[in-house]
Image (cartoon, rainbow, N blue to C red; front, side, top):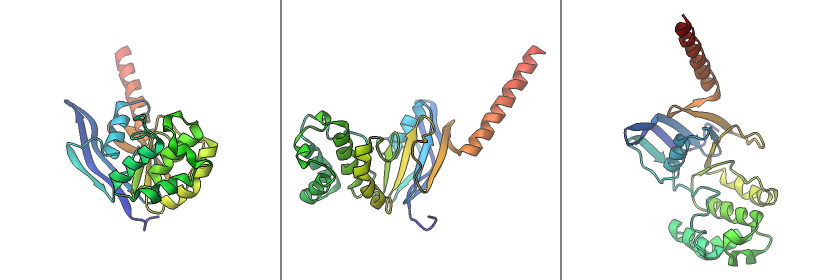
Length: 228
């Protein structure tokens, strides 16, 4: 794993909203094959970090270094929610990433039980078919890192089964960053690590536990002083 290439580096990045500092000198290094789960609770900082990771926001300080094109958020219907068919969404993604359309469409179709689903608007399909198209069309792009707001694979069993072989292949060249409200335990992945977003920085779970202990001790000391 240590020999795998780095696909994403956040080097002391700073992101502000007005005068408020949202991300404060944050560091992160992700290698191909890694699944990095970032736990952040229902915080605005997690949403801002997600938009920085997927290229929607720039930063005011530090640097974001990418090993290749950033992938769309895996579960995002962006490009597919315009009312057109799934084929139209694939056309938009192929054009954005410079892909030949026919091989790309055929690769997505091979993931489906019924390729004719591509002639329907994605948002009218059942969850299994919709998720297979959204995740599959993203994973087939020539990207080196992906973000998502849950796990790197959908919870839907049928969609997950269809996508797993492709996911294994993509992990050879790409890393995955998953932004979660809490600890996700329904599935563990090889080369997975967990980080906690706190006060604009990322910490290991052990580091965060020590921070919480320190905060708790300080509060007890303040309470004791107030009583005295």
